[in-house]
Amino acid sequence: MQTFYDQSYSFRSPVTSADRVLVAVQKAIVEGDIAAGSKISEAGLAKQFNVSRAPLREALARLERCHLVERTPNAGARVVTLTYEGLIALYQIREELEGLACRLAAEQMADDEIDALSKLLEQHLENQRVREGESYYQEAGDVDFHYRIILASKNQYLINMLCDELYFLVRMYRVQLGMNGPRVSRAFDEHKAIITAIANRDGELADLLMRRHISASRKNIETKLQAHKEVS
Amino acid sequence: MQTFYDQSYSFRSPVTSADRVLVAVQKAIVEGDIAAGSKISEAGLAKQFNVSRAPLREALARLERCHLVERTPNAGARVVTLTYEGLIALYQIREELEGLACRLAAEQMADDEIDALSKLLEQHLENQRVREGESYYQEAGDVDFHYRIILASKNQYLINMLCDELYFLVRMYRVQLGMNGPRVSRAFDEHKAIITAIANRDGELADLLMRRHISASRKNIETKLQAHKEVS
DNA sequence: AACAATCGCATTGTCGACAATTTAAGCACT
DNA sequence: AGTGCTTAAATTGTCGACAATGCGATTGTT
Image (cartoon, rainbow over all chains, first blue to last red):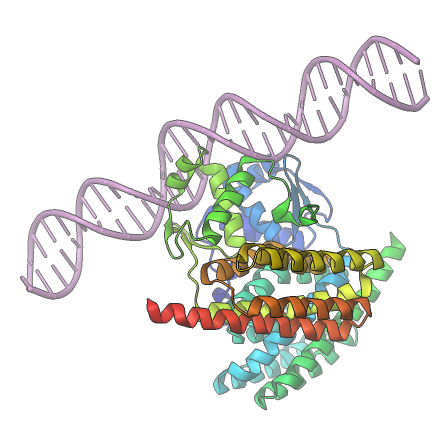
């Protein structure tokens, strides 16, 4: 599938070995293969990926940039922990920035881009029906949907912040706490409404709908996080 | 003067030599001592600061993080150039995020913090009267004002994005394009109105006023940038 | 003279070793 | 037993050298 990921920094094809290590560790953290809250050993990871510590440290710096690890001088790096406060803080910002992205997209998106996005959504709906219950496709589709709108905003800082700095953390919450049930089909409807608003060049409405969409998504994860806390 | 800068990453006291190089190069870029658009030589800068290339590259990675340099793999780093489009994009985001910060501050700021900020503003007004025309103090005062509100939001991502990632670029536009004239005294009035709204716990109004304040600031710099372009 | 390919130089990416700092284990002491 | 100090191991920060890549000049061809 043709995506536009390469327009953002994190999704360019990895050219250097630091790039390769980055995407690998990123995936490992997001999917929980490297446990949340665990300490990261530079020597250990370097050995594991057959690189020296130099490119690994470069990767760590970028992981810090997208809030997946926290580093303290002379003490090393830890994988972040998923907390209620962090989730709220993260989604507060997403509401503002993605709302803005929608407003800008409604103004700047070309007609054929809107058509393409609309078709993409239909396609996702098909996939969803076929692969009922498998949340992976929904996840990828949702990400793709949000990405396209963000890229359509044409604001380089907005693109950088959302696609490179925040989205991996968003995915980490989703992957590790899950998203399922009736929320999935509702998300589709909300996506459709947003596209309609953009197609009508109604930036204000698109903004509002996106904020609600994200707010609803947050509430869904909130309940999961609550359940998760009660267990542990 | 007691500031709260140490709560954000960029303003912690430099412990490692990479930290020292970072703040030095940051200042040099913001103040134009390293020209905008110029290429950065790793070996050259390393020699200039008497460090090896390792900590310098760490510093470069952080400079990229705060959008002061742009790196391309195997080709090196360039200092960013100040453009009209970049200014608009930057301030679009500031409006959203600092508006949010104001809303959160109005909800979460302690009464004595509000008093302190109010007193700080009076103090700035005094300094402003004494040192008429010198924009440095105004600059520092404005930065301090915005910082306190951002920190009061208690949102770690918001604090990180605004204080660590965007503010150096904002300062670069201000320092290199200047801020002066009647805008200075108006900014004071706008600051006062914002504090009043926060003191009244009116988050919605504080949000609106901050957006307007930033919008006005943007317009001011826009004209400077236009004049600057016509010359060159 | 314009263009293409090749070569050489400069710059960036990576490595392994050393220095500095933190952490924790061991020991003395209360 | 618990607490504080001392010391050793482990980890991070830094360095200088080498490898790989990109850029520019030179040369040869049309």
